[in-house]
Amino acid sequence: MSRPAPILLSALLLGLHWPAAAAPPTAPGTAAAGAETASPQQPPARVPPPARLVFAVEGSVKGLPYRTDAELVWTHHGGRYEARQEIRAFLVGSRTQTSQGRVTAHGLQPERFGDRSRRERTAWLDFERGEARFSAGAPPAPIEQGAQDRLSVFLQLGALIAAAPQDHPAGTRIELQTVGIKGADRWSFTVQGLETLDLPLGPTPALRLQRLPARPDQGEQTAELWLGTRLDYLPVRIRIAQDGGDRIDLQLQERSSP
Image (cartoon, rainbow, N blue to C red; front, top):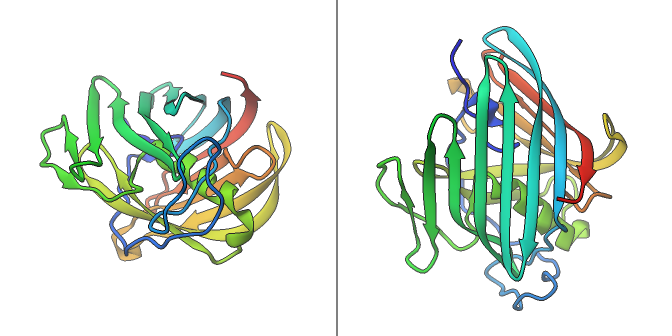
């Protein structure tokens, strides 16, 4: 059985690629406490407090089902943040992703993204030069202000909405340039609306976002993300489905201090 490659609790345990899309819009809101005033070019954000999230995971790869747990630890202090997620499963293997960087009025500004299975591969984001560099040997990629990595992007989505939830009704589209270990893509999410989920943690009000494949004729995946409206807009569920039948579903079962 081949080993899939996840993207965060990004749940891309399926190891799938999200392609480019159009340029991102700006969104209104209120700035993160203690950070510099937000500019019109980037939307303000409100990052969540530090947390440890444990997810129950179930899915299937090449027709073989599996169950396991995943953990996301998110901390920040003194204008710096660190996020670490890990998932392990028999036959599926293990994966650890890390993101470190700055906390600004606009949310997260990642500086280093690490992705480790058998060995770690790294991306460095240099916003002064406007480029990302990669240990995997790929050429540098241009990045824009507000770019995220494949771990920080899910925290940044929640931070943007938390700053001004009233400005993100159903139908709102949020686009973020997202850096992986070999390049930068544009990820686009559409707000679907509020739901109450029956999670292992218990009944949980959440805002559902959906990402449809940019090129459905090429068999790309669909993805759904739920952000807990009473849990600081942290991810509480992530569900990914691939055209070939591979799927993964992460549901929050525990939240605690890191």
